[in-house]
Length: 378
Image (cartoon, rainbow, N blue to C red):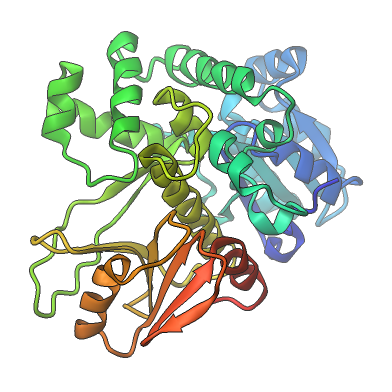
């Protein structure tokens, strides 16, 4: 049994919304950590139908429970009308709720009760290195870190099914887009831009839709937790900086599937892109689990000098290279960043197994970097 980093007990000062993309393990973690809770699973079609017909059944079911009783409602977006009853039970009966779902979009629709701040959002991400004994870095880069995919004997087939279910249940059935074929094409084009600076106009031309439609498609990916945009570092010192965000799918395995990348081998361009994605994925989860007060950005000048990841206000700068020997030319971005932010900690993460300092830049092997990240922080 894998022990997840997210310990929800630590978050339960109040009720929470637990969000996470499909198959990240939300239901599993809730059943493991709260075996004595009242558990309501809205994937049960009979139960879901009854609550849709009569949401007040929830109040009748729970009104006599003791104050501070913990109630988990899995897949609350399936019956968002229940949020009115949840609100009433929190206010009148003092119950505590964990409301679980894979999409915040259904809860953002006009008129939905979002509990007026009585439930805080918490997010569960794919597996991280600290949750996997003896992480196989090449396996993770090829198939991603969704639990059922990383642990599967045939992850390729699971990835295909994952995208099909996402398109069917999150997009088609909820009528989030008018043209499903165009959106499917967008998923593939967005994968080509994975880890790159977003240019809505270029993507729009490739998809045959407007730039405003592309922007709304990216919003859908974020709301359904299938991807996220990382903003550019904006504090200009000497060099003029690019301001557009970068986009990443929430899991490198999903990006690989959409790009038809298979059996990635060290030393190839595709492996390098996937390697960078995996490290960014790890940093993104670490910041949200451990250091939510700091943000992840990237630094890119108009002369195309860049650093892949900036933590906080230039506190840490991280370059990511899938090379097995770090050479001086790999340090160009970090050196330029150091000229503007000499007090920053600068790190290059790579497959080079010899950890060392090159001037004021740290060279750290990727698995050692992951261990340091979760044990000591940055």
